[in-house]
Image (cartoon, rainbow, N blue to C red; front, side, top):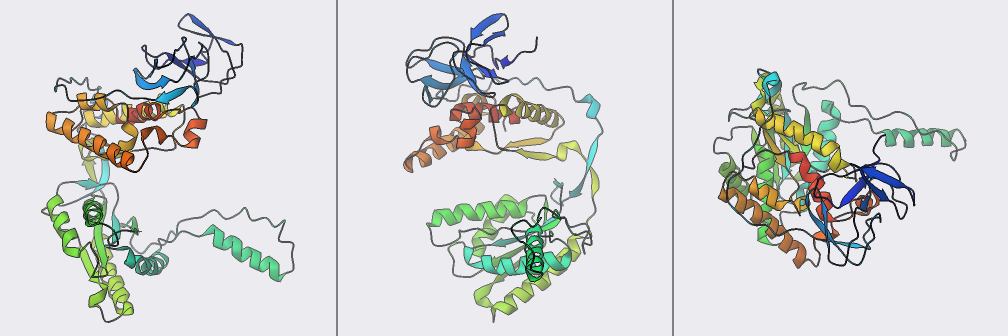
Length: 421
């Protein structure tokens, strides 16, 4: 008989409902029978034992919450009967031994990428527009419309088409209330001027000035990281001139990240231009010339050890941590076994599994850096009057992710089991 419940880890005292369970129904798992005391929707959890106030709730083999009051065996886990809880964590030595998967079948395999002069390989070839301050956002919008439309990167806006259709119907005196507007999916223009340039991206933001200097400093490092990304072939920087995030700060951060950075990089400062029109005209001219240059790049075969893949949330529900995420994690281990890298991107959603990641760290500095990031973020959250228990969204909770620790324990599965560097 097909199981309709699952125990994720032998230590767990909850089961995951794989299908809707009716009140009074008996479910069996590994020979143990449980009577469901109330309706339990698929993706949600039922308790395998009676729980008293303060008892630890274990899932994925780790602490994910504590009982707020007595909970009977077979009852539904809810926000009303358990509270988020997570184990404390600390460095306890680097003794991790990884059992890498067999990757022999992938020996000699490659992917087609863009080779950069610093030895990295991009999976795409983009041009970036980076404003050092939010004051330049409007200029970016103007340039985006000009370049996207004329160079073939614009996506047909189906909503503009719908509006145009309504205008035509209105002129014809047709009934607008019942007009069929479900048509014409957006399609990317196929007549691109530069076939080897995957797109032009505009990093509009709301920072760079008007806040504290520390915010501008962090933003500068972030924008430099975007420019340094191997998927980026060239960069246009738009600056006002008087903002906190000065161009030189950005350049210093870029040099610190990559001392041999040699991609096309064009910088325009509005307060040094004669007019807004001149600024935008020159930015378009120089960027066009840069696009001509990076369009000369061709995809070339590269070994799989050059791949670096980031994994992050995709709208988690109660099945993600037992289905898609472990599958992604297995692929992550295969890639690491081949010499590639995986980036586990969402630090806020690692609450409750810190100790595992600390234990997998290759050395003490790496472990302490990770702990510092987690504790620093937690302090920011607390200083704002919140805490990790508030992380699960209404959609998460509706689909069975009752505490942040449950959500995190499942989310971390995307990173596989390899050493943390």
